[in-house]
Length: 434
Image (tube, rainbow, N blue to C red; front, side, top):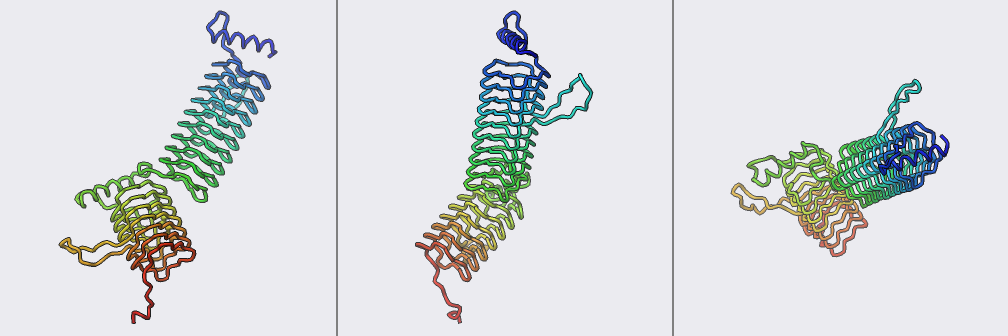
């Protein structure tokens, strides 16, 4: 196609858009237009399906609602280009520059073009955006299911509500991207940089995050079912998950326990969640007194102001848990890993044992933290009177202002612990008991 022919087509397209006589929609399917300059052109609703548009410059152009099905846009310049509701199914945008582009509601699913001019087997190809520069692009409500987005840069992009299930984002730079309410089921996010990203309410079920950086990311309410966060940098990240994002058996157990507590056992049932994976669950202020939580994984859970009186948490993974102002009187925490946990202002004391008549017997049931790992835990002003801390590992723990009067700390390790203002128990030599 000669330049004169292309200019004539573009002029007729402009008249068509303005509904003037002599106008005609630009029909450029399967044409070879490599390297053409379309800067600032109004190409709304133009048809480019199967066209070769590699190295073209569409900066500031209007391609909204255009047909770019299976088009080749490799290394094309689409800076601040309007691609609103464009059909980009099966398109190849490898290495394209899309900084500040508008891709709201665009369709970037896989696709294959049937060329009737020659034989050949039709294979659906995923949209290819590998290595693309999409910094500050607008992709809200776009459909990129299954797209190849490896090694791309999307710093500050807005992808709220986008469909990204099954897409490959491996090694991509996704700092400060808005992924709120996105569907990222089964997505490959391995080795991505998600520093400061917003993933509130996103569905990440089955996604791969191996080696990812989630520092200061916001995952409040995100569905992380089947996601392995081992080795992922979550420093400063908000990983709280409400109960409705967990399997039905866990939701039912929590609901039944609530009824059991509030009816004094007349209805519901005590929660038995032995060995369940409740990482990062948000149970702030919840009453789980008497619950059976042995061997449960509550790493990173939010349990501020919760009630866990006489609960059994033996051998549980409680690393990084927030128990600020929680009540754990009489709880069994034997063998737990509370490394890095926060128990500031918590009450971890004893429960008065009552007789059949409901009256106190004068005997106490202390919380059991024997053999518990509390390395670098924060226990500022924690009330731990009468607690059994025999053999506990408190190295590097902050016990500023804590009350350990009458606690059993025989064999406990306190190397590097901060004991400023701590009320310690009177140590009695074993020989004195003879």
